[in-house]
Every structure is written in C-alpha cells, then in structure tokens.
Image (cartoon, rainbow, N blue to C red; front, top):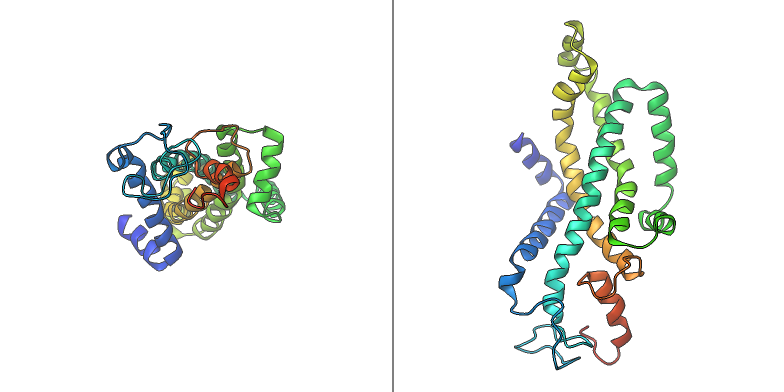
Length: 244
C-alpha cells in the first residue's frame, strides 16, 4: 500500500510538489509559537515599519508583526482547506463507489450533475455557493467541500469501473459475498491510492481557494490572521507600505 502510494506520487510531479507544499504549511502551523516571539493579534507601538531584524516582514497598520501573522495564517488556511477536502473526499468516494459499481440511473445522474459542475470554474462555483450560504469560515469550508466532491466522485468512479470486472471481484460474487462487503473489502482499498493523490492535489488548491474567498470578504472576519484577509487589508497600504 505504502509503496504503491509512493510510486503514484513519484509518477506525478504536481502531486509531489503539492505534498511538499502541504507538508511545509503543516510544519509552519505546528511550530509557529517557537518560530516567532510575537502573537498574531499582538498590537505594537510601531505601525507600518519596514522589514528589519526585529520584524522580518515589517509591521501592519496596527503594529502587528506581518511574519507572525503569515505563519499563524497557515493554521486557519490549512484547517479550513483540510476540513473541506475531507468532507468532499468522503462524499465523493461514496458517490463514486455507488455509481461505478451499480451503474444505471445512479451513474447517469452523477455523471450529469458532475458535468454541469465542471462547466464552471472552481472559484466561480464557490462564489455562487457562498452567495447562497453567506459569509463565514465554516461556509468557506462547506463551499470547498461542494466544489471538490465531483472531482473525487469522478476519480473513484473511473477506478471502480476498471475493478468491478476483475477476477477477485467476480470470485467474491460467485461465493455469495454481499455487495457492501465487496465494495468495502475488495474495491475500496484498491481505489484508495488515486484518491489520496487527488486529495493531496485538492488540498493544495483548497488552501489557495480559502485565501481567495477570504480576500473577497467572504470569511465574515476582520482581524483573523488569514492570508486572504491580510491581503485584503494590506492592499489599502500598497503605496505607503508595500510589505503589508
């Protein structure tokens, strides 16, 4: 299993880069308190100071250390993205298993729905969903989950279609093994590899999607150390303090 996943990652350079990116974010999120002596909401008495030895990326309009907020921003972006991708992975896998194994009406409906969703760019579809749900970090996670569910469903469905006629699946049917057991014990473990690779790719893009939606003011927050919110607030000071 592990060797198979490693081969899949090494064969896909984008997935390898995505895994490295996510690993770096996770490392920064975990070690943030030891990397910087400041707090993400700690207000200083020297606003808009340029990068220096004391403040590596300078300070914002409230005197907060920009480097600290960038590091702590990894936590928010990564948690929201991971939550959204986890939900979409579970939902998409369930849909793909059912559609690929049973076919018929289930497969037809899933294919048409995913075709419609794939017609829209991810960020545009997320904006439409956010317009319905309203602002908030939890709504961003839900929007990410809805956007990425069809991707996992397609990946899982394609793998199931190639596996359901395999000899070991046919043998399980012949000896009377139930459909649920076949799906969970014989098919699901063999589609896990492609799904994990896709989850890694989706997680990297979901982090960027969270930042984009927060930048557009859809997080419902104002001072949280989120990358998108920092860019949204900092754009007003571009000419005065480029580092924010």
